[in-house]
Length: 514
Ligand code: ATP
Image (cartoon, rainbow, N blue to C red):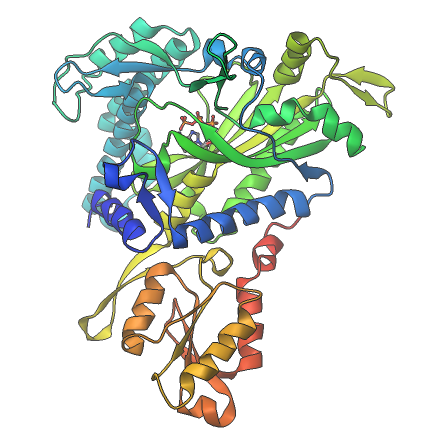
């Protein structure tokens, strides 16, 4: 199965098992907008809780807020979004499809890396055990040729982005002979800038109407509340403010399912520090955030950092945490050193002093900011891609199982009476009643136990509990474990202890060593 086929199956699975539906599907959907179903919302809430608690509960100096989506329009002038929140777009004249010019070039560069990898794989086959990858990479003329071309394009690309040179971006696309994946032609328009903010009107009359924006990031709600939180919480630097909320971007190209949406959710944390210490904190947050991702156990090699070629207008250092999606390594989270850009600009645009009095140095200054910014939906897709597994079973059967970390699983326990009689349903219901105050538990009595197991595997339920004749005699139940399919008999008290231990966030948090 190719990665593309795998991704298609994953999307179909998300729909079939109530994780994600296209928005307003009965009207044929709305581009790049999605709804979360009964299992999706549980997984999403669990991801949010993993993030929120790791920030707000585990760190004494981080507190949360929940700011409004609508903000005063001047906010977006101060933040630079009105002037500079643009993507370079390019159209193919034959297919009439629109693309982001930067993404086309990045994809071309990724293809060169794939070419190099193919050369390495070929050579490994040829040389067998004697193969020395490092030496091969250093000496192969073919690899040197591909790498030189890629590096030259990389340099031109970074320069073009930094100089906002749209003509040069188009020239790179032409020089690299990038073709439209739909029409297969190189018949491109010029590259143009496109502002990504959605606007709407506020006010009851058209005359009094004011253009306001749907926020394209949650961060500004934190910046404008910096003093409110600092004063009312008597916060001392360094400290952080965390927030989870919706953001909206009129993305030019919305592809890859929930990877790039027009309405999505962000989990952002702005960490305010003394000027001059921002690099130290930026490095610390890089490490902390990578540990958070890796604690989920999806394989350390599936994550990497990718430093930005072009720094945003507000940043002096920026890196992305990338995950190895079925469509390649792509950004899940950004870690940015934003300097004092935002707070200083809000000070300027609002005319209100936004400064911190540092009791240690007896000085007032505008703090610097290091932010961690992750998309809930992108994280959801990351977890889904990592968890989705197809397995061949003994006897030729196949199963699809979502191997979620238990704390994130939408349903923790399924309670299954072996048969619908002899008092088994009543005992099973009692177990559900005992567990339901603490966990999301389901009761299922339809079909054979085997079929019920498959249904729970497909939504990633870590524990299936079967009530049978012996339960009625000695009060023990069978636990069937999702990943190993191993079964064991335990008492109901022991069941509770197991669920507690496996499903608690504590298990994940301990890996963060905070
Ligand atoms: P990209 O380069 O993919 O457009 P970005 O660098 O503009 O992303 P940021 O502005 O740094 O993204 O946003 C922080 C995080 O918010 C991203 O790492 C991503 O997880 C999430 N995010 C951004 N845009 C979208 C979107 N359109 N749909 C879903 N998630 C998004």
